[in-house]
Length: 322
Image 1: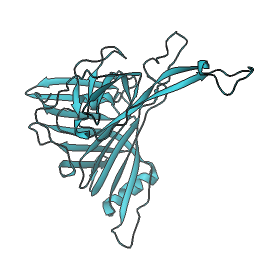
Image 2 (image 1 turned 135 degrees about the vertical axis):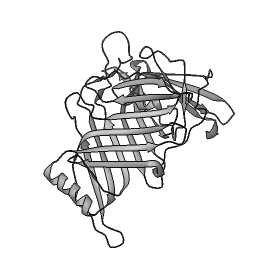
Image 3 (image 1 turned 120 degrees about the vertical axis):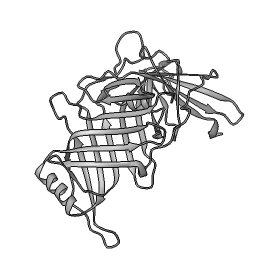
Image 4 (image 1 turned 90 degrees about the vertical axis):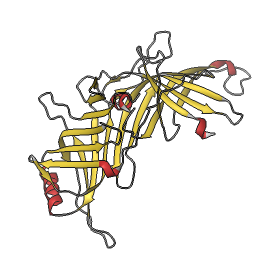
């Protein structure tokens, strides 16, 4: 049954070498797929009907997958850190604090993702995806919904077998949801009274994942950054005199500041996302015959300069969560 499936991540000490301590996550779907390609040789040959069976070599191309979860207020620090360039973890006063930031050089760890898939005959097979490196992410909060986090990964190789490493789950954890989410927008240093019903933030980490070489080894090397990362998002809310100022900021190309705070249920838990420099990329408010006038504001996250992180995420959880 699907209830017997589970997914977990273990940080790797060396890229492509399986980790040993697995943190369990309550994933929504199984999207982890391996890719194989064929090197085929076809030439003039008498009596050939089609490509010969001994002229095709199979090549392991690695694969891709993503982990989509309802974000819990404990146990998600490693997954959040996987999507950022620099991560610092501290334990003090009974809480664990993970600070994940964008940076000019990525020092993000690689992971082993264990996906356990149950068979209809009661069997369970553990697929261990090695060398998982985050390539993209999306964080979303919306009225009447749980807060969701999706992190996309590239992986180097995958093995499978019946040996399953038991994952660890938080002793107690609650999902973040819209009722404990607050968004603060600042224009010119002053908070804007904008009633927001939806927030999203996504990142394309600009990773080169096809690093294959003539080295008598079909496995690719660890992805590296080969493009400027792009961080974008969107805010949606009701149009008012206050949000008119945000439209004016859009057409003038002004920089604004964004801070999103999530209050956890577990004692001492919280999450804060800070973007000190965002620039709206659209659009005009939209009136309708059956709804109040809504204002959708897509934005781009920019580097504020002076060594300040473009995005800083602070995740606080109970120190005994994992």
